[in-house]
Image 1: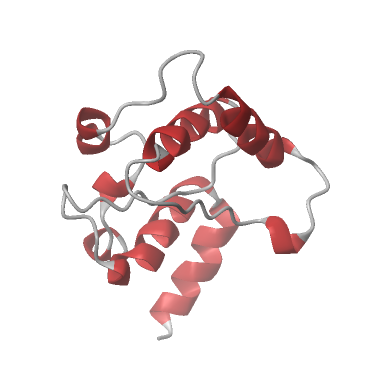
Image 2 (image 1 turned 60 degrees about the vertical axis):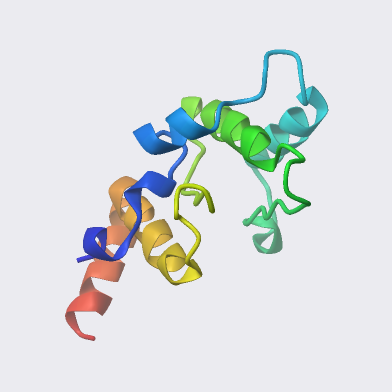
Length: 123
C-alpha cells in the first residue's frame, strides 16, 4: 500500500536520480559534505536535530551535495530516508513526500514497520 502511494525514484540511489543528477565532483563542496556527514554520525543528537532540510536558490548544487552526503551516510548505514524533489523529473508534488519517507523507513526499521503496519490496518 505504501509503495503505491510513494515515489521510489525520489531516493538517492534510484536509476532516475542517478541519471539526471550526479554527485559532487571529487574535492568540491568538501566543507558542506563534511559538516553534514559529521552531523549524521553524532551519537547524542537531541531530538530537535533529527531532520536536515537543505534549501537555497536553484542551481547552487543542493542536489549534488545532498546526493554526495546520502551516498556517504548510506555506506555507513546511517541514512534513514530521503526525498529528492525534481521539477525536471516530475517529482515535485509534496503530497508524496510523507508516504515516500514512510515507505523507505519500513524497508529499514522493523519496529517502525510493525507500528505503522498496525496503524494502517486499523485506519
